[in-house]
Amino acid sequence: MSEVEQKTSPPEKVSAREAVEFAVVWLFVHGVRLLPRSVARAVGAAIGAIAFGALGRLRRVGMRNLELAFPEMTAADRKAILLSEYRNLGFLLAEFCKMPGYTRAAASRFVRYEGLENYLAARDRGKGVLVLTGHLGAWELSSFYHSLVGMPMGMVIRRLDNPLVDAFVNRIRCLHGNRVIHKDDFARGLIASMRAGETVGILMDTNMTPPQGVFVPFFGVLACTASGMARIAAKTGAAVVPGFLLWEESEGKYVLHFGKEIDVIRTGDTEQDALANTASFTAAIERYIRQYPEQWLWLHRRWKTRPPGEEGIY
Image (cartoon, rainbow, N blue to C red; front, top):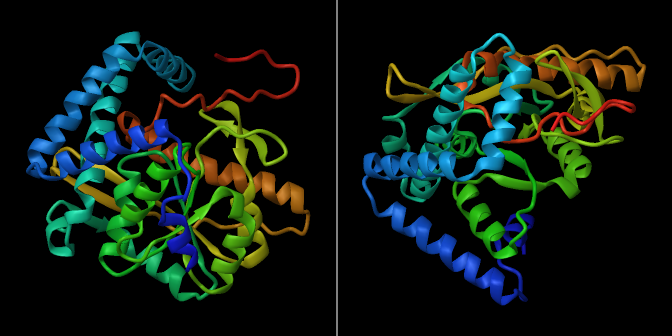
């Protein structure tokens, strides 16, 4: 059995609760898949609106994050951003349910590239490409679309708690040649992929803890951030290219943006290089979020881990 097959196949033993959870997820995904895309997105937006009102703890986390990132904003403006975020999460949920039925021709009617030449130039160097991305826009659809048009990639993914759901979700992600690299295989999997000249996308915008994470500025507040991508890039010579699939309201389309390759600092001081490069990558993510604040996952406690001696933010 191949590595992908192992990660997309259900486990032999599951609990009754896991089986019920999987059944609910399966029914929901297949139910939404049967709907026309416009109706599915409307259903997703409605679910997002309900979640905004019902999930008070997450709403409070989102507002706190927006206070940190945009202290100059009014509370009303922050609330509007958060409400739009829930709508976009609903859209993403609908797109994920519909993904197995998408063809290249169908998806290309509502997805286009911008800056693809940046990715192709980095890929053609032959040392591998690390796509710097995050929970911004339609991150699940981005790698799927890239594989759909003939450019499959690896994805560093955290395992879902329910192994049945994890396998089900990964089967959808990998329908057109994508590979899943779980975080417990992170270093080995990435080094092998870069040596083979492959592409791997990494969501680098979540809270971490030392020693895997280092503290770098994010919206002017120190955030503990994974340094693994910086270390792999410095070690292998892989190119680092920002990549985000963002909803453009004026076009009624998603645009898969590939930014210019980010220079990787290599002075020979491993720890200082890791810190400097992680800060550079994080600053690139921040620039995209500032352009599309309503599409980032403000619900995550991004600043949870604090430097020694600092009080908790939440």
